Image (cartoon, rainbow over all chains, first blue to last red; front, side, top):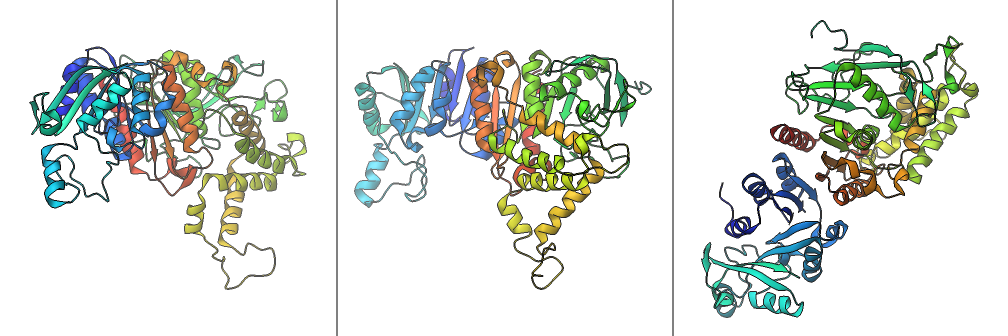
Length: 195
Length: 376
């Protein structure tokens, strides 16, 4: 089974043998890959009961929980990495969730869909409607994405918080695209952060 | 192994002991009623212990020898089930303090030749677990592939991981708690007062003339039974429906179906359970607080259990041991660094859901157990 491209980037850049907390781990695809191929001690948190059950059946340690609430219970610096893939934009307070990630993990991987991708801009500009795209496939009224952001928004946030970017990857059509003009050309961003 | 009398259904055994109890008593001898299913494999790595709840017994997956009723957890244990005698060596032991075969207040005290009654020592959940460990030693079972239980069975599961962490590879604790709350104790106290207030109780010395405090025990069971069900479940099943009549009687018969149902639950319970055992086991549950010996910090209690895999399951309509209690356990396990999975399942059945038909519970337990086998 092939991983989603942003997850593959994360899997390829996690130090083998490390301890990882995957927040919003879905059905555990990334955790299973990390465990099986990279000897990583992976733990997960996931809101959806069905996903938790699927991940548990894979033998993964997953807790049904809400990133906005339950991260507070984890001890400081108890993981080498905290991962938040495609979940940031669904949280009620992304800023506080990011604070928690970097409290719990020494480093954090954060991936999110870029709302400033040209296709999104085009859709808003010409149709005057909230875009429904490949990565944002749901109508405005039922989308779980309640805090849309762009790559530039995220960069500003990281800078304002004084965080260090240790790595950044940008995806368009599931392929890596350049850092320059990423805010226009990338559908998807992956950042590796530390305090 | 077929001829080994230690293994099989409805085994009864007395071990010399002594069993050192939390109350400071060296209890001996120790009677056990238990069942085993399946075969212990050559490297003794496939043993699974099932822990039963307050009024349960060792007939987890076999027909009861007297009532003929099928085992109490056949949904989870049996051929083709998550806990399967084809793959596992399964042990279920009647708890210490019970009246269904293991040592309890209705057992004969060899010193007097009469039932212990209230001279039976007060026991704890940890004592129940120590007794189980003593029996497993006798059966030649060292480490357990898994310990599984719901409600009071879940309390035993958690105690196992604290008392004998090196013997537990996987722990599955369902619909349970790490300590009895004031509300939990309060409901039990209502039951105990009903029993002890029954004139037939006579200080627990009622065995000789076969005239037990049945009315008190029935009320105790009625009160407890309410806590096992959900409000929505009761409404759906009974609502305000009347029992066998078209109008209210303007009297104190069981006008409502729920009254009739509860009375039936209470009375039928007295046929199979001893009032003194009910006192002792509810006391053990009320004394249960895993964090107490660890300055109230539950994470410290689990410090030795880092190598045990945990699976914690709660039910959304369980108000006896609500999801918050399970989360409390999960947070402590996280803080202790133990690998833990947790899920809250949805069911209309309240606390009793773990015994009923919740397919998700089976698939989760099955996946969790198989994953442990793959990585043993």
